[in-house]
Amino acid sequence: MTPKGPRSERETVINFNEEEETATIWTASGPMDKRFRKLGLEVIEQGDRHTVFRCLKSQVKIRRQKVLSAERRASLSNRMRLARQTQVITTAKRASRGIPDGDR
Image (cartoon, rainbow, N blue to C red; front, side, top):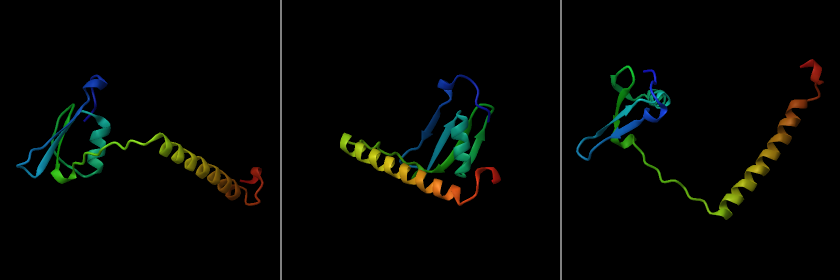
């Protein structure tokens, strides 16, 4: 499948009902097609511009977006900044190991 047409029309549709155990996924998106193939989903139809996959309904997950408070976001930001500083120091120590730059 080669994605063609405007990007706004390269959509992915997941269809399932309460009676069947499987879901079908129709996609005209190249990146989504690649992702579903890596997951090993069964291809049931492949066209020039689209692919249809089948999977178990239990494989379809809908997640709620986490909403962080300003306080929690600041705490996580500070934690990441400290982790990056530690990583830079650790990487610099490993990189030197007493070997001059010209001899690498």
